[in-house]
Amino acid sequence: MRCNMKNKVSFKEAVIVLLAMLIIMGLGVIKFGLSPQVPVLLVLVVVTFWARIRHFAWTDVDNGIKEGIQTGIIPIFIFILVGALISTWIAAGIIPSMMVLGFHMISVTWFVPSVFFVCALVGTSIGSAFTIISTIGIAFFGMGMTMGVNPALVAGAIISGAIFGDKSSPLSDSTNLASAVVGVDLFDHIKNLMWSTIPAFLGSLILYAILGFHATSSANLGKIDQTVAVLQAHFSVNFWAIIPIALMFFCAWKKIPAIPTLFINIVVSVLMVFIEQPQTQVSKIATIIESGFVSKTGNASVDALLTRGGIGSMMGTVSLIILTLSLGGLLMKFGLIQAVMEPLTKHLNSDGKMVTATILSGIGVNIFIGEQYLSVILPGKAFKKAYNQSGLANLALSRVLEDGGTVINYLIPWGVAGAFAANTLGVSTLHFLPFAFFSILSPIFSIISGFTGIGLKHTTDEKKTATKEKLVADSESSLN
Image (cartoon, rainbow, N blue to C red):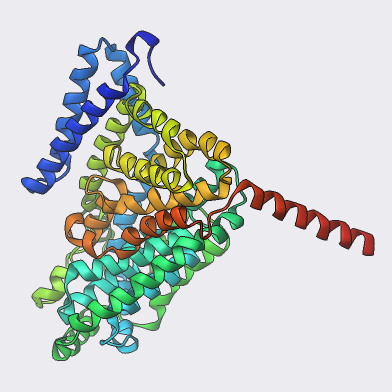
């Protein structure tokens, strides 16, 4: 990835550049409250001029940007489709129907932990955190707003549940990626994930139960009844709303990729609009898909909740992703990330230090590049040899990559996942971050596992398992 040896970046220089980037982005987003696009753009300018000072060619800059963006083309297209899905689901009455059904089924007292649990359960079945956040997540968020629950707390529960489902599902892209990067069996990887995932899940559930109980103790039940009445009066709230939801499960069962799944759902939702409202003009549907659904119930809170979606609503996120991926491409092209990560592996003389360094590397890649796939790929490549030399199994590495990579991206304001969640739910990343307990606890339990050895797989464990499986196979063949 580097241009030539004479331009090779030293560890010290890479650290200085990365720290300067972190200061610029941190001050912009946290201190001055700017949207992440401007600080990331400024960092791009700084890195570009640094590259020219270091005598990298303009063609290297161009190629770095192109290579960075290329990795995000599919996610960008998915985000555009998700914007269209949200607006058509509202127009067809699917999200309003889920809200009404939820008000009838979910206990107000245990609303927040219920949100976390349901999102985790459905997410495991579907394998896509983005889909959960943009569908049932919006419905739950609307319910929480109606009850007067802290929006950041509800968003944190939705996102945590969605991440658990994404992390635990064999249908998840990120889970498949983590197992593939280090070369382990997918289902062995998921099974081994549970050593940190289950404690993080239980810890999150307890915290949501405690905070949720206090948050809903003063819930306005009269407002709930009023909201249900408004939804039933202005939207098609009926049993048929389950069709697109069932289609999502069917597509997940058939292992249909995200893009055709979203296409199918959008088409079905549009057909439902025409069936329920035959007088609807094609131009109106096109406007809804492009610009989003505009709720005109006369109820200010309901209109604020359900005026959303559309391709246009995703353009802010898309622009941030393009800038972030461009930055990531430059950092990779000029060897800045590699220059920092590679020396770390030479000074790790214990399992706990190895796991901690891998977690911190994943977090670092998320902060500096903002792309969850690279937060798995880069530390995976950098640490695989060191894990093998220290006697740690590949399964240990694949689990740590998820705990420090995939789940953390949702906590980064300029991260692909963090920006998507913030834009979809309308809550800034820094506001829901303290309540995204699953993302916070996963790396903590992973580090604890590294220092205690609980659930940490070693190469000797893999050899014992392989020997046991061979003996069982030989025994069964001899019986036959």
